[in-house]
Length: 109
Image 1 (tube, one colour):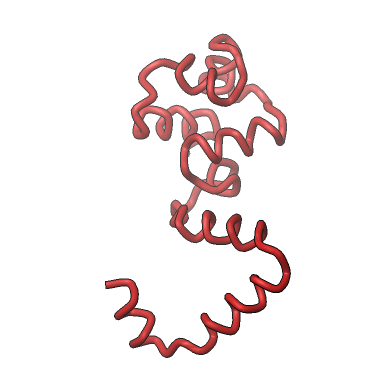
Image 2 (cartoon, rainbow, N blue to C red):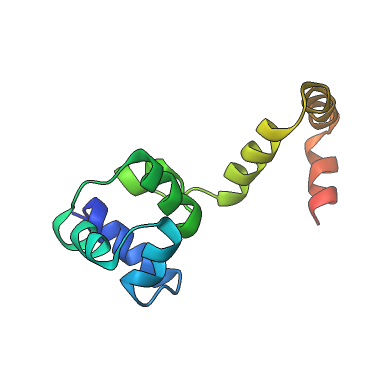
């Protein structure tokens, strides 16, 4: 069974962070702390979890629970949506609801 620490290590390596300090610098933690997290499942803060999530391009839920990696495009869209003013959110929703599935596929292609 893959632990949280092993999952973070695998994701770090998959994303091209060869050294623990490469990811640690982005997250804002030391190499020693990274080592503890990866090898001993050392606890870390919610803020660190969010930083890991952004740096490793996976959801916080995936880091904690594993399972199937989520499409980060969906998460990015949600973050962009949340940053929009209310009027723009409403307009975007109306546009998205008005698209038929075949229209949406043509827009993506």
